[in-house]
Length: 301
Image 1 (cartoon, rainbow, N blue to C red):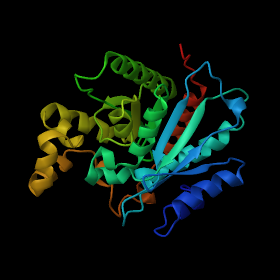
Image 2: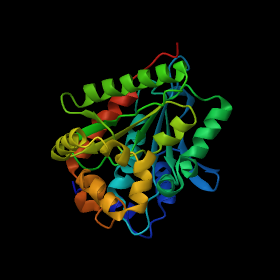
Image 3: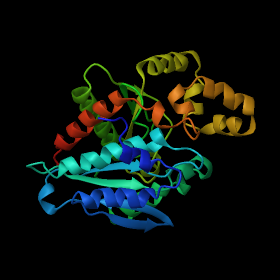
């Protein structure tokens, strides 16, 4: 089998209408999706027939952004995760029992890079969730999952003033995410600080969310060493506090921190985030993760 498949290469073409491709891919395989416009952003929602849901167990909302930075193929950021989740959605149709999965392909994730979390497309989704009282989902965000052999669960430092319930709910979700990685990629996964993705919007709206990405083992190891040698690197990676301002105003500081981040992340938003940068092993590992996620059941009470 060719890697990546021709359909994927069509998806990352510069002129591709990615929202249409997503919806047509699903419809051709018997899955209806809905275009949901919030604050001018075109999100795509996938919900399955009622037989696939059991109200006694938590809903698992799976999120992956489909927008990309102009001038970049966006093969890893975030086309690979989109493609894997699309194929996973098809496989969910053949499950003999319920899976409690709903999927959002989000628009406008890349806007948060310049505007902050409130300008991120998924902030509108999270705000609607909050307004409707949908705060009990397990939210799993997948971003940049097409390169490497080590699943990375993003570390999240919660502010000290969050409620006790939110902290408890988040830590329980984080524990479930660790268990999913433990079962799907035994002995080869890590927790490390990563740049925020759509999880930032949900967290900002008081909804627990976790983010999962992938890195080559050599890059993950080197990055862990860099974190131990430079205490400022975490703030720079997560683009927060004084380091955010410093990186914006000082090109040398920005270059310094970027050079200590994994190569995979340095490819983002460039023409080098292309199909040739992807690795087949990532797709196999992600398939295991998504299958395990579908089989995971968490009682509501």
